[in-house]
Length: 274
Image 1 (cartoon, rainbow, N blue to C red):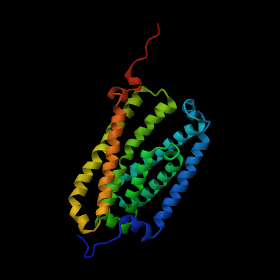
Image 2 (image 1 turned 60 degrees about the horizontal axis):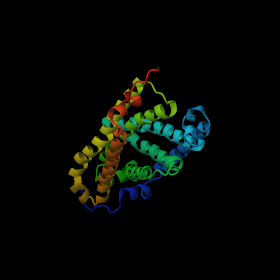
Image 3 (image 1 turned 90 degrees about the horizontal axis):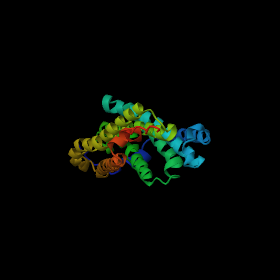
Image 4 (image 1 turned 135 degrees about the vertical axis):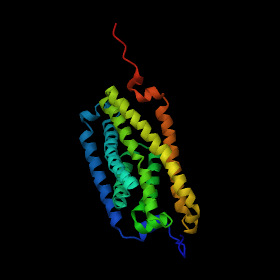
């Protein structure tokens, strides 16, 4: 039901300027912790054995940057994946503000240590879209606007968006297998590759557009009556951007062929010595 007087402020503006600062403090603390932890990983790994293989192709600084990005990203993926499942499946909405604060802190750190230094423009855009799209779900008044009167709906949709981090767990493991260990066990590599492919397609390519179509499109008139069309398009276009980017990356992952993707070395047995 639309309010008698439709609000004029947007959820991002409301969250930033018209609510208390507790969640902003949480974001700041998260950013500082992520920055300190990433800096520590970079310092410890710069000349360590864990980056020895990487240093054959990269400078010690870049090898440490890549290793640090994947280590911290892996921890981030674990935390937000568990939280997203708890919200989506068990409606534990009370944990979501802290989860988003934790995630935004990670994005800030990743900007500093990885996305900008490596000139990853797509990753920069991705992080901006994620921050703008998820930040208002932390604040109840902003979430009410963002959900056109239904704060839990927009928090649930936010959590659905973070289910994509499940695939990052397997993507990061694959990177460690290839870049750090170099010669992974075939069975563990294949099992991880299968879970990566299934989770990537399910959470990034399929679930997001389907949920958006089922949950958002039917509420177009409610958003219009609530004077929150900007919020509507942020959700719809944000989901479309992430899904399109993920679809493109799916084709990149599978470009060498399904067999090459699933089996280390393409599944070919090493030639026997004469």
